[in-house]
Length: 257
Image (cartoon, rainbow, N blue to C red; front, side, top):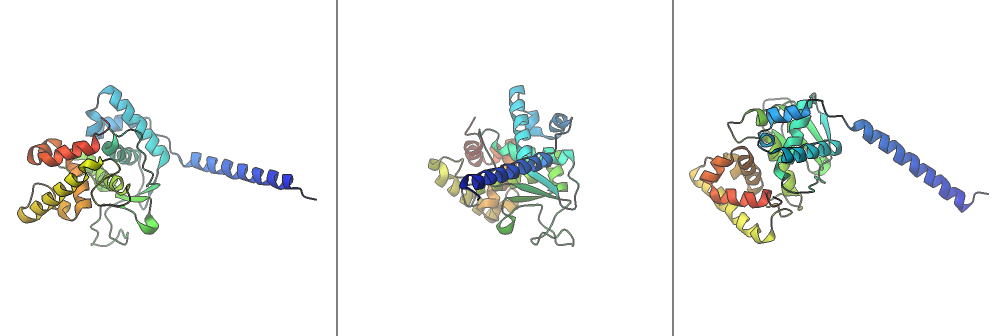
């Protein structure tokens, strides 16, 4: 006769086996960092180059943690060491001064070879999308264009960085809505000020044009991501031409400094 203790014992064994198999699977999924990964950071990531030695150590630790937590998968593209390092750098740059940050809304990144359309198709001439934060069935997934990813770090003469742009969308989304107001990291007392400043700047862009990429005038969510690219890629230009916006972005991104 089977006793309750035998049933419980069998259940415990089954649970332990499941946990063991899951652990092995997770360990197999983790791809070790290349030997030259710190050299790649130094050669390609301007933000990293400008840190002091102690800050570089923190940046490196957070790169390692990110790459152990998020899976990067090629979709008709080969995921090379440089791609992994640049994606991780794009993730860490916006939240570097925010301690204990976790992208709990991201499980996997799909690396596409080029741009794609709204149906995630990689073929054809109408492929306007360089990166995307997934929703619905693609929740917790980011798609990023390999060519644009690399150009964002290779070309230091403009403010475009697709990786930073998409990770800012994720930061924005952490409070439940992607509306250009990252309430999870922006002090409540500054929320309305930031919202008003965004609306005023977008209206000014639409009326008079701007030195800011006009894609930022699409809506507040895109404005926040686009202007964040300027903050990290061309801070001098942003501070000179839009000091109020620059000041607010400092409050958003350097609250932990």
